[in-house]
Image 1 (tube, one colour):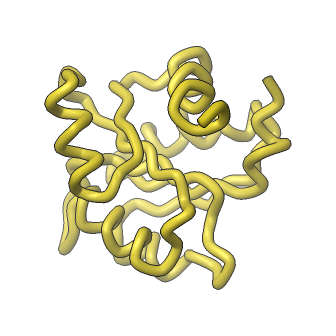
Image 2 (cartoon, helix red, strand yellow; image 1 turned 90 degrees about the horizontal axis):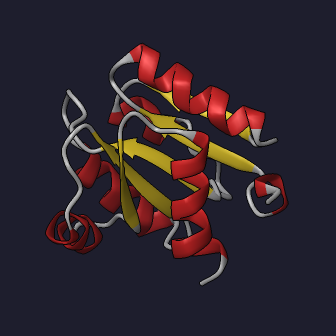
Length: 128
């Protein structure tokens, strides 16, 4: 699958720099241009008027806003953006349901791999 056909630009937000690097490298390896941020406020300041096609957002962001709050703000101005929550917690159906209620489109566990990312995106977004 060529993700870059559907995704021109993605936003990656995580308060741990190594996680940002890993997610960015995964997306860049799939041909996607990546914009990164270490906190929600920084991320909001980097959103272009046209928005992003995809956002990978750490659910437990440190700072003024957590990942859920950031997702809600992003959806207010760009409802078409696919937001994939990223978490170190075990993902259960209830966890996914809560994330969707709070503004995300789906959730994936860390550590994120190329296969896990593509599987979720194909199943929940690209084929939908």
